[in-house]
Image (cartoon, rainbow, N blue to C red; front, side, top):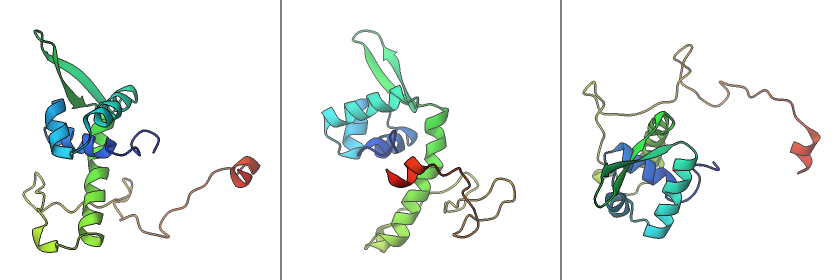
Length: 137
């Protein structure tokens, strides 16, 4: 959450993944303030989520592309979008569906890679050593 939890960070990743790679396009598509977006893109770059690549020499112009880490976030972003469409939208008639490469309407699900079962409450455990500092902090 330290990397992607800042306001505008996930939206920037979403837009870069959707093909908006130039700064002005990302500003327009997200509605983010220019200075805030620039800061988010710098932090995403420092964290290895996006790369800044030069596409023109004179004048120097750059675009942003997702790294492997950034590409791995696209499924997460799609799952959050799906949750919002189901639980937080009031205008369900205006939902624009995404289509998967297979041709079907995209409805992402979180599944266990080992068995293919959906991840649901009670279907997993989280085992870690509990330290006193974790409990009293």
